[in-house]
Length: 168
Image (cartoon, rainbow, N blue to C red):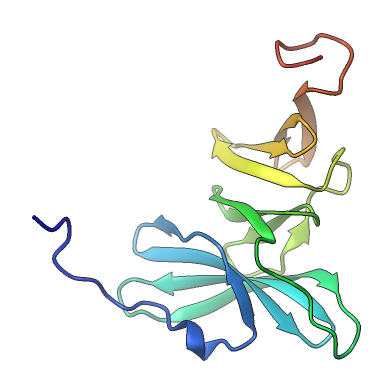
């Protein structure tokens, strides 16, 4: 017995020739949010798109420079996006080596949130009760209040003080 009755084509990837990678889709209501890594002149860009399930329209909501690349040179983009999640008014994007970005769902440019993080390698993200929880590759678990930009280290495999059961 099939689990669904039909499938709809909602995003035609061939319409975006610069697109090198696409995040796991995040669905809320009648909208799908996806983050693409696109190679354009000057670098690799993260671009947030909202796709309407009602009319299948795609809207660019925001973009942020992931990393510059010299003219004529391409950069590997596969696997750059390691985690994505929806917040109250934002979409959060974790990357393999360039940190954590936040995109406003209203269409403002994306911004880097991880300047003061102990590592720029994001492994996992989840949003709960107004806070963003971030797991870093180097063994850190952080809590971030996106509104205040406050960062709290909840656990660290590199911290010598035993402030949580996960500290060494």
